[in-house]
Length: 337
Ligand code: TYM
Image (cartoon, rainbow, N blue to C red; front, side, top):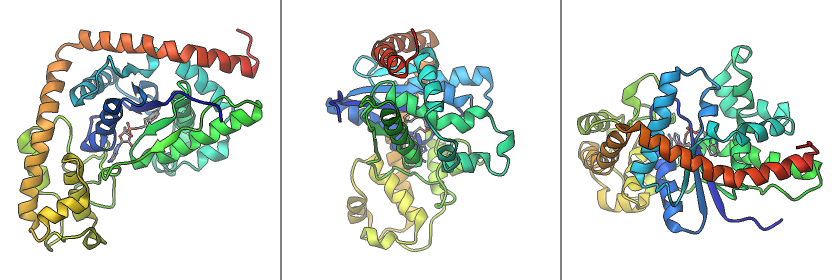
């Protein structure tokens, strides 16, 4: 394999609100990568992905700016990392088209998110929703990213990205695109629904009490944790004791991720406690960690012009990396430019 610059790419879709899952499974990790300083970091609001399902235009604009504010409020520095929205860099769509021609229908048909979202009504879904993972591969490979931090639910899409890179390299007899690594490293790689520990916490769930939104105030956060489903037993003292207790495990993992320790250490401190007690500690911790972020988000979104300046500058920097890679791709494919 050729030598690639160590580079991180990841994205968040501006559709609906932001949840604690987006924070713990993604953005908190993005900040770690940035602060480690070993990799160039590129973070994107993937607005072209959002419109694979119809979005109200004003909501899409608002959600894109809100995610930008979320990144910055969580610790992403738009000077040290590249921060931009996808549609401003048209090379994503251009490379996405080429990958539509590399990826196979069978591969797309096997994507569990496609199967979940399209359900039995695939005929009525957009062509964009079906091709979604090929555009995601373009996001990553347009920058020759080597590492992709994501929550568990995106793993299959990054594996498909590797398949697309490998097939492109093989079909054109080149060693051009890297096989990007999915990085799923947190105890909170899969933050679960507060009312049903077998389902993921999701911004699209119709019941608000199932998730913590990044914009929830302190009282709401406390109430949601207080009402979160648990079981009647006390907390175990070891991780093995969480077996078969999905809701208990979820709350322990959230506590661990918020306090940057592992689940063992949480249970060492809280083993034997009843949930009534633990939930109060968890709510206090969550409020302490999340309130400064939501306050800063409110401050930043009050000045949309400043956010748009950040995004415009980020897009310029992104294009500086993307343009030569897309040009080289055109040459490899034989497109006259
Ligand atoms: P999206 O917008 O659904 O989610 C953004 C990130 O948040 C993570 N996440 C979670 N992690 C843990 N627990 C949860 N409950 C939870 N909910 C969401 C997701 O795993 C993701 O990392 N297809 C992607 C966006 C995308 C992308 C990319 C990501 C487009 N192109 C290129 C990486 C690289 C998506 O819809 O994420």
